[in-house]
Structures are given as structure tokens and as C-alpha cells.
Length: 137
Image 1: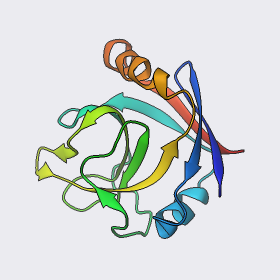
Image 2: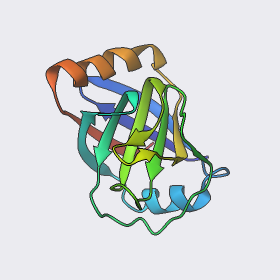
Image 3: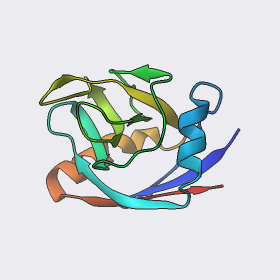
Image 4: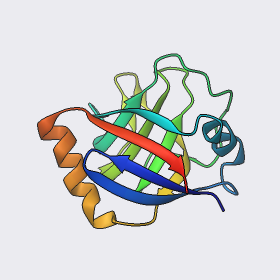
């Protein structure tokens, strides 16, 4: 099992890569580590924050995909009808874009400090973009 340390805004989390459920997605993401970006609040999906990735191609297709990630689950949308993105649910999410409902690959699950997710989401909503970084533990 591959464990990750995640810093998002002022919060820290531990997480696991879902290597058995989404092996190709995890392998592609693991090649980018350590990874740094910015989190912004979703526009259509509900209580989620995302990393917009434009036309970045991770070279993966759908695996372990869902439109309704649970709080603490990261999904990767590999692109297609909308831009490539990574989304973190901090509450109820119905993953979609202006084109309609989407599905993304659930590939990371947060395992610590789940009680801080709502605070992180509200920080991004009310204070704007926040830095995020992922590293192997």
C-alpha cells in the first residue's frame, strides 16, 4: 500500500493510493510525485474542491469511476467532454460540468483528519484558491 502526505491550505492529511482498485490511475499519478498545485472550489458539483488540469493527459481511461465520491475521496477525470481534473469531495458531490454529469476514477482516499475536510472546503469557498501538495510517506 502506498501512503501519501497531503498538505492543503493550512491542513495536513494522510491518505492511501487505491492501487488495487485503480492501478493505472495510481501508477500515472505516482509518476508525478511530489506534486504541487492549487485547489479551487467546484462550480457545478456541490461540496467539492478541484485541481483544473486543462488538456493534461495522464494516459488512463476509466477505472473504479464514480460520479458520487464520498468525503475524503479524490477522483481523477481523465478528460474527454470536459477538461482533465482532480476533485476532492468534502461533502455531498454529484460530479458534473456544464456539459452534464461526469465520472472520475477514485484513486486516493484520505485516512486522517477527516473532521477537517468541511473546514478546508469552506476555506477554499470563502478565501479562494489554496495550495495543495502530495508526497509519498
